Structures are given as C-alpha cells and as structure tokens.
Image (cartoon, rainbow, N blue to C red; front, side, top):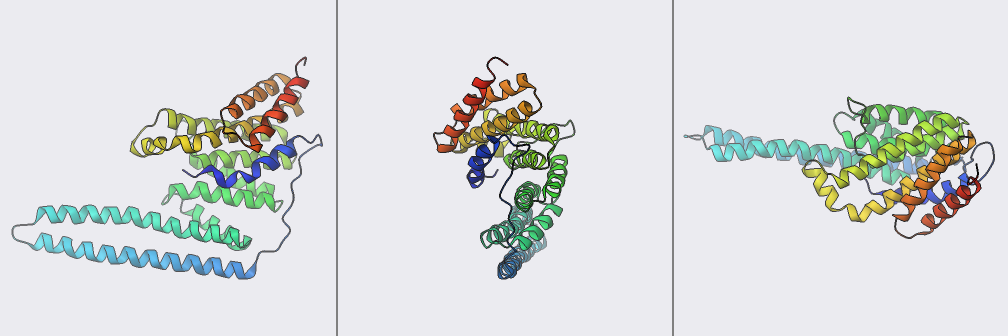
Length: 303
C-alpha cells in the first residue's frame, strides 16, 4: 500500500481551486517538453535494474535447481533438502516479481524527478500491461500516469486510464479492493471530469474515491489476512493523512453537488469533510479544508 505523503503537495492547490466560482476549475498546464537526456537516463536505469534483477533471479534458480537435483539423486532421497529447495524456488519467483516492479518503480520515480515525461509515460503504460503479473504495480503506475496526463491538459486520456484501472480493482461483486492508489486515482479522475466541464461524471468518480478510501480505512479497522494485519499494525502512521485525503474528496464532492444545486447532498458532504478533517493530524491543509467547509456550510444553512 503506497504512502500518502507523495501526493500531499496537490491537496492544497486543489482546495484553493475549488473555492473559485468559475464554470470549471483551472490548473497550471505543463507545457514543458520532456527532458531528452532524462528520457535516455530513465530508460537506461530501467534496463540496468531489470538486467540486474534477471541476473540475480537466474543465479538463484540455477543454484536452487542444482541443489534440488542433488537431493533427489541422493540415496535415500534427502527429502528435507528437496523440500527446502522447492520452497526456495517458489520464493524466488515471488522475489523476482517484486524486483521487476522495483525496476519499473525506480525508473518511473527517476523520470519524474528529471521531468522526463515521455519516458515516464512509456514506463507507466508498460507496467500497467503487467497488471496480471504484478497487481500492485498497475494501480501505482495508473495513478502516476493519470496525474501526469492531467498536468499536460490530457484529461480524457487520464479518465480512460482511471476507468481501466477501476475495472481491474473491483471484485466480482463490485466491491473495491483496499488500495489507496486506486482511491487517489478516482479523485484524480473526478478532477479530470471537472476540468472537462462534466460535473455529474465528476460526482460519480468522487463517490468512487470515497468508497475506495473507506475500504482502506475498513481494512485497517478489520484486517483480513496476514499482510492486511501487518499493514494495519502500521496504520497509526498513515491513517491521519488518509482521513485528510478523504476530507478533500468530500469537499470536492460537496462543491460539485452545490454546482448542480443539490444543496442537501452538498451539506452532507461538507459535514463529512469537517468530520474527517478533524480526525487528521494538524497541518495547513487541514486548516484550509476546515475553513472552506465551514464557510460553505454556513452559506447553505438556510438552503
């Protein structure tokens, strides 16, 4: 589960944007060309990391396979060594999957730092294609790609990325898997629809973001499985920022409902924004959320 800190810089800008009363919000558009040197460096870094991961995996498999064969040739068969080597081979496959994702993640973060937008987009789309092999990679890559596309004024492409990831992230009964990146992606899609002037579609995506954030909070309150319990044990470190993100989405949703003159839904979302913000750690963003939500709620008092 990704840490929320790397998205915090966008929260305040979005809050300020939502206070504007124009027909739709506006964001600074990134018109800078992709850094060509950074593109080459990012691709080279990815190739190097992937080669190193492949070499490490190949060496491990070669050694474990040799030990497994020797154990099976032993008379009588050395079952203890054979089982250990078989387990080692399975573990190496899981480690290899993680190493491949780290190769992508490291190169994507490097491309972001170097403003190598072209390499970043190529790497993200490539990682998304491996969704079935590396499930966690797809949500992270989709989030980075969508935010990059929104920054380049390519809202429709960002929405398409979000829609595809939403389908991958929902279970057979339509339930949302607890993934904070998916929640942030839905919030980004809501923003993209607002930039495109489609307020009603923005509300749909805001509701999805709220559902996804609640799923994350539920997974901490009632963890299921070993990994969920391990994540829940560290919940105190990131639960507060998640509450702040949820408050911001409720604030956006309230403003969207206000724009459609659904004042009842707007009031409810402003109240929930205040409730979640009060559960977040103190910060300038928290103060801004509370200030805006209380101001707008006061205006709607007699609506």
